[in-house]
Length: 383
Image (tube, rainbow, N blue to C red):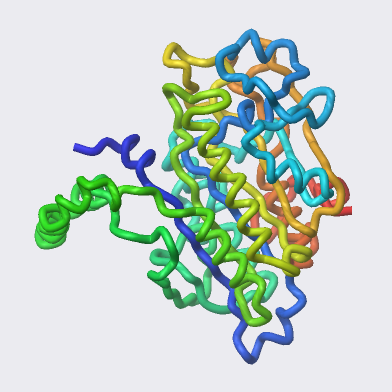
């Protein structure tokens, strides 16, 4: 039987596009920028992606999880060497990092955290719409969505039609683990249908060709090309799963570093596909929570709290590393185990909405997030 953790580790990348302007609304939306959200499911370890090498307590907690040749950014922060393309964007002024941040959730459940990451709320499963869908409504971004199933992130109050192309490279046969998980969640005829699909494709699935992860870089390139079109969408969301590294997390190589390489390729592919539209685009990463500061007995990390956000795009004009660093001494950790969060992640989202869609910060905080206390980071990120 496939466990929930195995299912989360086996699912590949997914792509969602939304906000194609209709003919009657194109004039109102043609000057809007683009927002791209990269959802890193499983819990990005911010201390691996952007290690605070200048904090002397880092090595005390995780001497086996520090990359050997990080890219120095400031006296405090470095960047994992597998994020070299993103480092180039930083150097060109089209990148930014916000560290010690998190969505307002401390329960450490993947499913609750991912729900809140997409809804922008504070209580799991209470919102029927997503923060980006609500932002689209406020900005008057209309149209359909490219998606097999509409993600909560881009759901709004209005009707949105969907379509999904099957000819993107890397979108082949589903893996056996995915079909088994679907079978577990259904009964009767549907369960029987999934069982027949497993039996029919046993030989193909066991050959290994069908169990590959979806090619996230190709999905990002395709999405960028669509966002570039004058009559194309204004919103894209892509998922990369597998960050739940409880064992063998890795330093220069291993599961987390491999996923950082994949993330780096996604950034690079989006830029390539966007072309000139890069200048009106903001890309941001999101994750449900960070990971524990101290490595566990399996040279991995467990579910944590604070993490980091990576941003890229031409709407950024200067390299920035923003953080109110809480420190890594035991007394400074959240519940004496996790990196503390000193900034609500939704403040980052709100500032990105303002930059791309031109909405006033007060409108965003009140009508998108229903949280007036969110900080306006626009002067720090986009000026």
